[in-house]
Amino acid sequence: MSTPFDRLPSVPALAVTSSDFVDGGDFAAAQYSAMFGVPGGEDRSPQLSWSGAPEGTKSFVVSVYDPEAPTPSGFWHWMVVDIPADTAELPAGITELPGSAWTVKNDARVAQFIGSAPPAGATDHYAIAVQALDIESVSELGLDAEATPAFVSFSILPHVIARGVITAIGRQ
Image 1 (cartoon, helix red, strand yellow):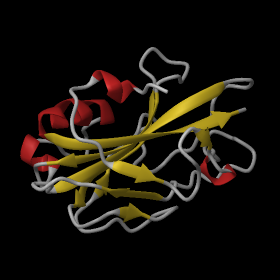
Image 2 (spheres, rainbow, N blue to C red; image 1 turned 60 degrees about the vertical axis):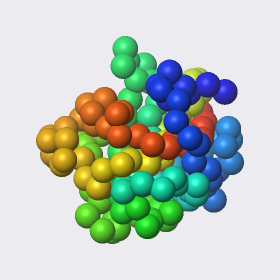
Image 3 (cartoon, rainbow, N blue to C red; image 1 turned 30 degrees about the vertical axis):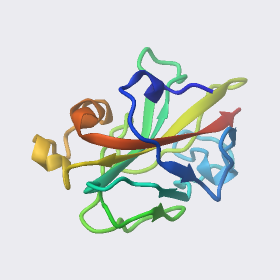
């Protein structure tokens, strides 16, 4: 299945996995959105692991994006930046980020993971990406807590040296 990241310049691949879902499979109930009123939803970030970072990796960015959300621009559910280069996993429901990592405000303008909440009867595909960067911090690009996930994505593009993307499905 293609993802929105397929349109970006090609870079070496990272291997990305999750113990909460298989690539191309359904999100677990915990990854649905309580904030958006999905029964059983917990807005709990999925467990993610990655490997294969190239030499020169100084940090990682992890994101969850729904290109099929009923908006002209999709919906950013989560983005964590400045993840230290020696990190290879984020546990499910993470609350304390490693090192100087921080969460970018998502499209609901909250700095947290928001779970799946497709419209009734819909099936959405969520692109979960881990990107290796050749910079330690997005602050080197002039980005701060007011940056949007789309602008962070645009700004880091020349610094992405590897990327891995897996897909999860949300249904209502």
